[in-house]
Length: 415
Image (cartoon, rainbow, N blue to C red):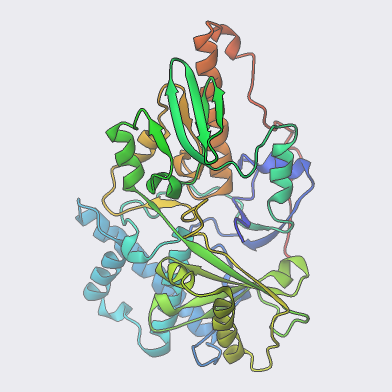
C-alpha cells in the first residue's frame, strides 16, 4: 500500500548497507536514472479505453516525441524568470512546434506519458514547478522494487527501540530546555529534545498544536511545499490471466483518465495487480467505497482482458484522507521559494525536523526520509552535547545506523 521502490540501486544509496546486510532482494524495473522512467518501455503494454492494444511502435515513437517536448520546455524555462507549471510549459511548446502535437491514438499515448510523469510527483502537471521538476538528484543504478517490501527494513531499524504505537500527538510544548509531547488521550511525555517526522500533510493541516506557536517563517515554509497523493488498488486473483509484462497501461484523451497496473506477479510470483492513481484522480478515488473503487478498475481490466476473473481479495489505500498521512510525499509547488527546504529543516531550539520533506536532495523517497532522519538525529545529539558542555566528545559518538562494507553488490535481478 505504501513505498515499494528503492530509487537508485547503488552503494551511494544510504539504505544500501542495511538492505544488503538483511539479504533483501530487489526486482529491477528500470535501468534508467531519470525521474520519468522507473519502468522500461520494453516491459510495458498499453491499451486504449476500449481495450484494444496500442502498437508498440506508437508507444516508442510518442515516447521520443515526449522527450523532445520536455527538452523544449527547458528553453521555455530559460525565457521565464517567473516560474510556471509544467503543463503551461508543454502548452507553450506545442503552440510553437505544431509538428510535436499528436492526434488520435498518439495523443492519448502522449497523455499517458504525462500521467506517468504526474505519478512520480503524485500531483497533476498544472501543479508541478517547471523550474525544479528535473532538478532532483536521482541516484544511479536505476529503480528496484523491494520484493519483500520495506517491512524488514523497518523491523531492523526498530529493533531495541521503545516505540509507542497508537499515540497520536496533539500538542508539542517546548521551553526551559525541555519538550513535552501531549497525545490525544491527554498523557504527557517529557524529554530533553524532540525530532518531528510527521508527514508534511499533517503539518500543513495544523493537526498538532505548537506551544509556543511556530514562527511565521516556519509556517510559510510548511505552506509553500506541496503534498502529493497517490493511491493503490491491489487486486489478488486465484490465477494469472494477463501477459508477462511489468506494466499494463490505459491511454485516454486526458492524463486524468489514463492509468496503469503494476504486475507484481513478475517480481514476486504472486497473482497480484496493483492499480496506481495520482493527483486529483487519487483524491477522487477516495470518495468511492473500497468495493466501488475495485469495481472501477476491474471494468478497465475486463476491457483489456475479457476473460479476466474476479479478484479473491482487494486492498485500497486512502493516503489523501488518512489522518496519519494526509497525502503521500512532498513536491515543489509553482513559484515556491528556493529556500523552503532549508527553512523546513531548520531546528527550533530543541525541536528538530526530519522526514522525506526535509531531505537535502531526495524528497519523496524512502532513502531521502532515512538520510534526513539520520541528519536530524545527529543535529539533535550535537545540540544535547552542547547543552551539557561536552561538544568535544560529540565527534567520538555516532548515531546508530549501518556502516557495513560495500564490497559486494545489492541483490537485484530481472528474472
